[in-house]
Each structure stands twice: as C-alpha cells, then as structure tokens.
Image (cartoon, rainbow, N blue to C red; front, side, top):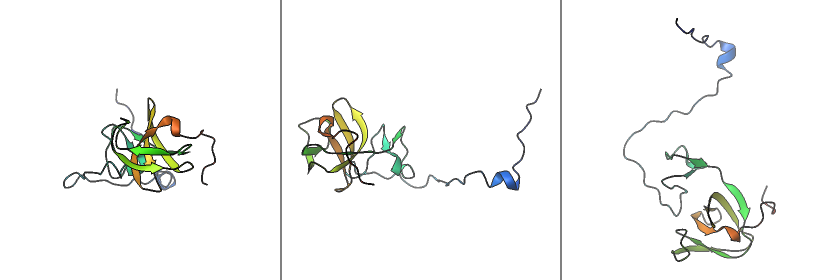
Length: 128
C-alpha cells in the first residue's frame, strides 16, 4: 500500500518555513590558518559553518582568564607560544580536552590551546 504524500504547502504554511541559504561547491577548497581560524579536522567554530565543512561544530563558551597564561599552537606545553593572555582576558572555549582548552582569544583574533586550569569559574563576569 502506498504511503500518502504530505499536503502541498499553502500560502499560510509556506511563510512559516524558514528560508535556507544555498551553498555550492565550486573551485578548490580554502586552506584556513589554524592560528586565526578555529578549524580542526574534527571540529570547527559554528561561526565558520558557512565557510568550512566539519564533522562537528561547537558554539563558543566565553570564559575569563584567571591567571596569565600562554596561548599555544598545540596542547603540548612545549609547543610554540602564539601570545600571552592576561588575567581577565576573554577566551572563547570551543573544546575541553583533558587538562587543555582549545578556543579563540577574540581580542587578538588568535586560536590556540591553554591549560583549562587557567580559566576563571564559569560564573565570572562576562561582557554583555
């Protein structure tokens, strides 16, 4: 027995349907700089969803830095330092991996890793 088709949209129901942004795969892929774009092979910042395909996207969780800390290229404490973040600086956490946090330092527009212990409590005052 055939399954009935859903009713065709009417002007009343058509306006309730959100419009979708169309995407086309054209040309070569863009290579993003991992120090300025929050894109890894497994995860990307949801704000880049219209520019990059990733298996998972994360929304930034804004947190303050509790104590001065180096923003690093990799989780390894011996990896290259991109910048030093001061206590009180904003850091947008995208992923917590063991004892490290990966995210964006928006004031510097840099992406990297910091020790998760250097983040202030989640209830610390954040910008509106």
